Length: 451
Image (cartoon, rainbow, N blue to C red; front, top):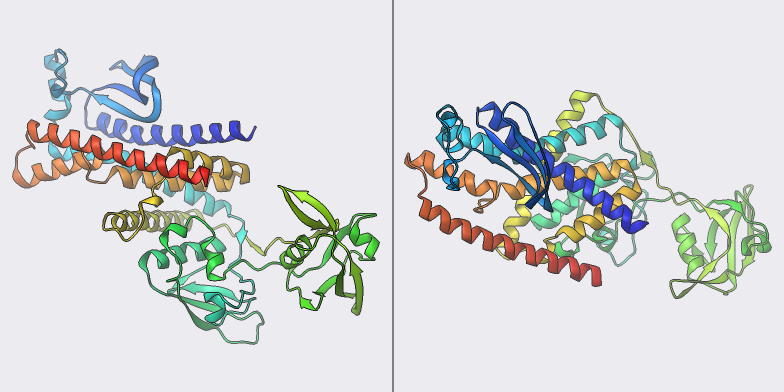
């Protein structure tokens, strides 16, 4: 069932992004008066098609799902096509260079517009996310060395306001990529202390670790609620030990238990061990002995006491008006695009590993994961992939939209189009570059899957 969900989630992502990208080309081509012969979702052999509209445009589905194209009336095709006199003005190469630029650029722009609209809709709706409140860090971490002790709420990172945990994470991703310390403006856990600025070094994190729990390596984790017990299951280890709903656990074997997550972790690590639990019940101190039951999970022995413990962090969900949401969507799309370009640039100069290149397998995996989490996460994922698709298509690689835009830029500067011979050589080189990138991406995908 999970595999089927992943495949369906990936198919929806791919289908939406391809259709939106090609619709950008199609709509602007029609607006410029260019005749469109075929609109295809997928590449290669056509497996289904229908013709619609005054031009009898062929709307098709092709056998290879990784891509799509809009085929316009083009005199360069040389496939024996005879262009009628009335269609001569509607042929692609006869258009002005600025119209050709508009048609080619419309695909990536459509991807950016989709991301902006998705983000704006999410901001209007309100995205429930953990607040940027910090859990107590381990002593050996960068966060502890910087003076963070837990309970602080992050207000700003490098001067930019932070409202939710994902914004904090994104700001620190930028700091890692830029290889500079992050300046965190934090409010104390109590209302009496003053707001202060903390310098958090991120040099210990490599760009390869950004896909994993790099915040954990820095010592940053979202704050969890106090270790107050919920429902106690009858005849479980907690019930036999005398624990009751509402008990506040203070310490286990003399070691303080700061929150619900710490309580769960301590019990999991102590199967069949006698634990001395210091707690507070109705304002009075109490000490009990607790022996977690031994349970096998994924080939590993863990402790379990059968009691509910809340680990849900403080959540923030605040919708904004449509105009403000649209502005935030534009800013989010711009920041993500700039970050993507930075990563590409650093990979080219060797500052970032090529292991960061991901392919269809990883995208499919993330599509399935976010779909299972919920609609908000899934839509956010679609927006991020749409931005990546837009940025990658604008790279000046022949075959891609960015390569064609490079040709047209040369034409604008020189007053004449790039020669067919140069174009043919560049096309072959571009195909070679794309094939190499695809091989690297698939290799990285398989390596992630195996490891």
